[in-house]
Image (cartoon, each protein chain N blue to C red):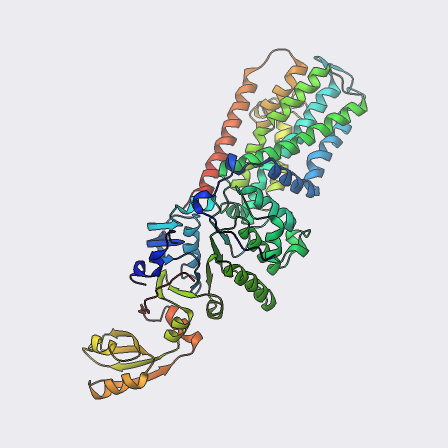
Length: 321
Length: 265
């Protein structure tokens, strides 16, 4: 994160697709989103990755103008989210529901098309989402995957600049998942900005150029899929070392995160040998242990409640593709 | 296929006129309603059936009532019953739509909440018109109801417009109870209201306390008012008071729940 405004994104004359500044959202005593700063530039495909309850849906709801932040601002294409929705600049594929069982697929598309000031041709949108062959089917008789493709077609109608997908493949089988992502990918090539929430690391890895990792309403990492993977797949060196010199540890090669917890120090790094050598030779560290974590575990560690409070991330410059 | 989206200048984008209200959407909504056989049977066939039973009874059907006969009186009652059943069902559709997440889906389109309500009301009125026409056409075919032509038009129009009161009732209940069973509940409530309003049995046959109670029920005022052109005599202002009171309550309740539902939290 950091000074993204100086990145190539600043060269765009058009405003950022999404700009969240200091966004907080609480429901009663529960803080679902705790100070989110996020800028998504036009053309980016961003995965919003995190476990259930990380605040992904809450954030998407605010970007769509369905709810208002308790603090901070949400700006979509330079406008208030509700204005952006009214102009068809932003649309979404929601997790479940949102369909009328007693309409056919084609009627649902027609209904939605009538709601907008202007849309892409109905036939084209159905073709792109792959639902032309089931046009006459009642929505209540469609499979989960077919319903999801219908939602996708509805979202494509206004030809939105920004498409939000909230766990779009939830409950879909492998084949449904594959064909759904094929349609999305095809669409992203045309330059649409896409932000999708998922709790599948593989999905984020396979389809996003940028991964924003959230945990308990905060961003814990933000970078390319490769960067986040590298960060997640490193090793952890743990040792007992009172009064550890954090700055010195951080300056070691391959170290991406240092955390001091009382008398123990935890170093997340790519080169655990270098860190171990330093700790054992230069400092008086004791009880040293080195652990390797797999990708999935790393993700859990990064996003789970027991994980480090915060991981510094490579400053993602996030240019539009 | 493969049509590359033309980059759209955000400033160029237009919002739909009338907050998204369109006749084409009402047509789709009506088609939805017609697809629901149960709604059709209850709102169109039942009132016709009741008219055939109560409106053609030879022991009283030809008795004079004001400017027409008893059969015409019953026909108006049954058309009103059908119309209010239709409009309240139309209004109560919001319950199912909220439950299914459709209302939420609509909120990520340009459709304005007020236009959504207008669509529901218009749909309810179309179904209400079908219910009224069904009873009146069967009335004409049976040759039993008798009243001047202008009264057919006047009573039909009055009860059709008046049934909007129950579109508000349906909306209110639909917002209040997010349940698939809301239609059954409305059917039951309207049955009670119809007895209370004197649609099925003349109120004069009720015991005194029941009769007094009945004058406070929601269909009482409307039923008296739509029969007035036929029955004539003196206009009782308590009918109007009943009508206004329930109209205020139902629309107030519907607006209250609607505001709560569409508020951004």
